[in-house]
Length: 82
View 1 (cartoon, rainbow, N blue to C red):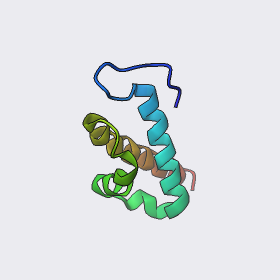
View 2: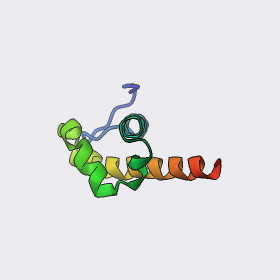
View 3: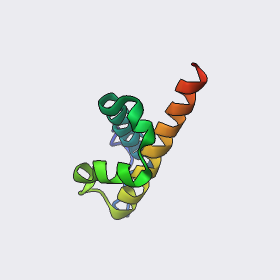
View 4: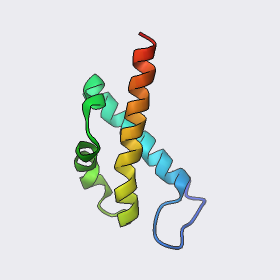
């Protein structure tokens, strides 16, 4: 994460949220392979919960959506290349 931008309400700057979601999506895919594409947003939220407990509530709410969307985009790209 860049750490150059600051938020007045305790949430992460958008760029840091994007970096964090990229990291989580990559790690999930590395661990689960194609099975990561079958995760629901709730599954993603449960898997990352222990790692995001210190984030602001809004960030904890948004992050699973960002990760899930990245996984869905990855699935579309991967299967369109097949």
